[in-house]
Image 1: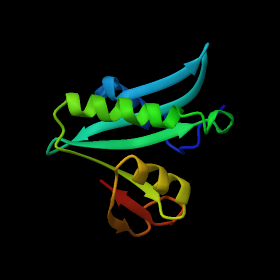
Image 2: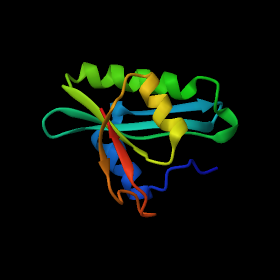
Image 3: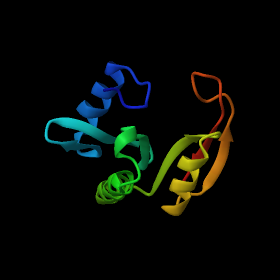
Length: 122
């Protein structure tokens, strides 16, 4: 079953090849139920590119565990900051990231392929 992020297979391979320690998968038996994919940008800035949890496994704390593990891994890489984007209309995601200590940095106009804006969180 597909996760919610519309990335191509090439994009997933790019992250897995370059930052395997920052690609965290959650599985039950052999079923992939959630993923957090990150990288380190120039300037030693951690970037959380994707967090996705299959719908039937949401609200069990899996996303929180994945983000905490991701933050820990990025800190172990001596990142000076961590950033991510969330679609401006995705209030639950924005509230989730705020609870974890992320704060709005700027609005990114027409950031997504569908033309919607994003909020840059740090």
